[in-house]
Length: 326
Image (cartoon, rainbow, N blue to C red; front, side, top):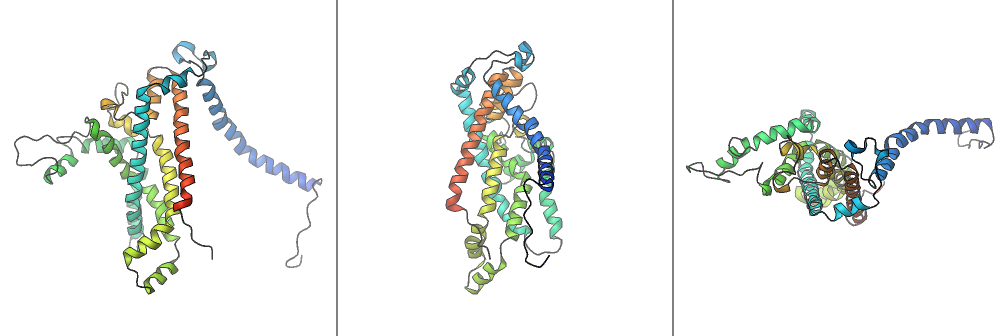
């Protein structure tokens, strides 16, 4: 075939076209079957359960449950603990995602330098992200012990929580004080920032060096280059990390269960300070055996995640900037 010549179109009624169609349907059917079995079907079943009073102990299989209309939705919408859980969920999600992103950007900038052994430093920075969440929270829980923990020792030495020379000292109780439990869990979330940092590192390496060369010629210093070049061109990565981070944070479960003690049933922590929509749904479903109500609450969480995701996608038009294609 001559260079630049176009291939002859395939007749839609030919055997070759039918064979290509069969291959296409065959390959996509693998994903389609997986989606129907593991995603669509569970969502439909969950939606059905949310309109029933299913109690696994009493009814056995979910198809034996009795329908109760929208009663489950009316119950949790009138529940003050539910709205307290909504506030806690938003508080944790916005706080943890915001703090993780604020810390990850300078860490990524540092790890983007051309230094000897930089790959080792990058590996060390990423390692906490692959540590088991249970082990991480247990270790930090010991570090935050009011009297014997490492964090309390540091704060005491810095004269932040009490003077070491005093005979009596009341250190911060990160485990039982309702005002401190959620901030403590948010602080623990910054430990596993490796995934977020990795996205920023990739974003930094995708910024063309010509921007910095032009800025240096114009006399811009390091801070001005970061503020006017690096940060604006990192906004696509920031947008991605914020959206994905919020979706994950809204569904956080392990940290709250372990931080509250994790024994004898979850009660929401001191004064329900660790009660989130996910943990409240767990409590209703697996401790009170009200699966219908728990499933309805899960759909409430789905709506909340959807609202924040839509807000992010609508708002990104004003603050996300992309490099021009060259």
